[in-house]
Length: 360
Image (cartoon, rainbow, N blue to C red; front, side, top):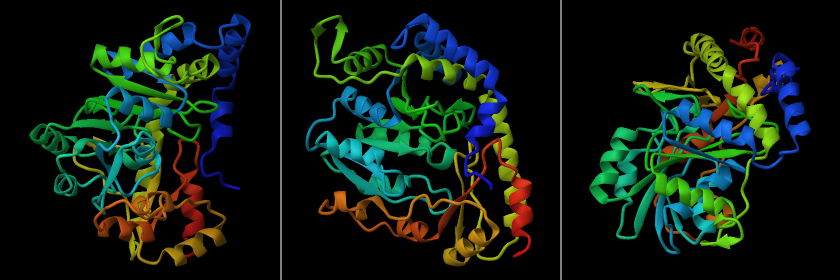
């Protein structure tokens, strides 16, 4: 059976190094913090080419910490994409802010700058731009909007770590950026994990304090914070996986090119569109079909796993009902059409395509 993300094969490829790294941590007794966490933060900052990288317990925690560090207050409005995982909007609402859901470009699935600008009010404080499915959002246009209206930008690079835009790495855009190390991400650990990236020493210090119960000095608490730390075993495994990330991303892109070549000539299917200047991690290989039910039947008959990212607009989720939001026709369209196929570096895309050739 073809796995959607072949984590077992990835583990086998790096098994010796991963076991050695985990054993080193276990023998050290430094399970929280310690040299592996510090070393990982340095390596992440170097990779993204920003001065500061701060690890934490999850990508969702990273969003909470970022919003707190940026000073989000109850009633503040933050513009978020309507077509995305719930975490950005969830974090805003949980902290008392008001997520305002903007539409997307139906071809790239990325946040639509014109929709963003149309939603700005006197209460708007910032924009969360999600690098969906592995490519960076249109930051040049978003930056112009943010400067014009004096807004901050938070880059959600949970799916794009390792991607680039005009030579700059994902995680280096906006006032601050976050990422996730959930196991199925292109760079994933063996549990939950996350990180934040910033150019600002002041923001970095504030994040570290917030993630450590609001404390920068032991038992002295300047802020109301939380406990959000990446454990040392996860840090050690990520240090090993980071060494192989660029190679694995290269294979993902080759896999995507194989898919593109096969699907581009099939009627009623739209292949992923990558913006000029962008490279994608292909965290998901996501197509659109005007007859998704038929595609689902074919995939099931072929024994090919698939996922639907995402079947329902965020503004229509029960937890957000009652918020004042405009109609987002592109979001509603793609929610009915999208489906994602296996694309990780350990996926045999040729096998997937061969199975599908029976029907196309």
